[in-house]
Image (spheres, rainbow, N blue to C red):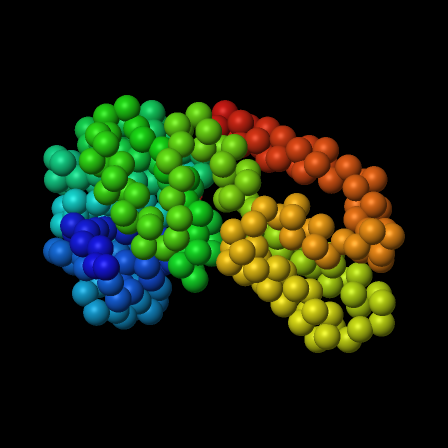
Length: 276
Ligand SMILES: NC(=O)c1ccc[n+]([C@@H]2O[C@H](COP(=O)([O-])OP(=O)(O)OC[C@H]3O[C@@H](n4cnc5c(N)ncnc54)[C@H](OP(=O)(O)O)[C@@H]3O)[C@@H](O)[C@H]2O)c1
């Protein structure tokens, strides 16, 4: 199946903007009208050499963001959150009137964007597995965006994974789970690897044992279509060794711990929104 998208600009094609770019240039995606991306430094811009992609640097062309914005029906904004208002102000009068502006930035509200732009806006929260086409992206409408604008945003992010549409009031909560989620997962993997090393395995063996167990378990979960508690029971024989380990984990009340961690994350999102 071929996904056809209208012209796209990525203002700030760094880690996250670049990950989305990798989805837009893969086979099966046609961006009619082309893709223009911008970065601040020439080195970063020149490192992006892809067919159908014009890569501009502000260092070389101070008008690069305006040139990119003027050429696109969808404008993704991938600069750091603190830079979003100034960046939007810089492109506001260069945008095509019907272009949809989609922010990738954490903590920048659609109200902030709409106060600067006359265009429809969307707010997104992708995560880093976008690099391998397995992102989870939360997508929220702005007050002026139409269902067609939202569908267009969905089509863009589906090139790098799965999209979950939520009201903007839930974007921070979604970010706590799927936006930060990769860091949680890597942290668990780090801890389990340390435990394996403590049991006498070499760093290499421990890495392999833990990483492959996570990957294999998740692939099995996805392929089986069965709920995780069922697959867990399959490994947990009554009076067996796994049962003892799970009992210890259960005693630690991981659910309460995870809830506290998520609440801490949400509290920080509120602080950031208040400018702290
Ligand atoms: N990383 C994540 O897990 C993640 C997840 C969800 C959302 N996000 C959001 O994605 C955004 C970018 O984060 P990131 O991790 O991708 O940061 P990043 O790698 O630093 O990317 C930002 C890019 O913006 C470029 N840039 C700086 N000033 C610019 C300007 N005035 N005009 C155009 N481009 C400019 C930078 O170019 P130079 O390097 O040349 O200065 C850089 O390539 C943030 O708003 C963040 O909240 C990130």
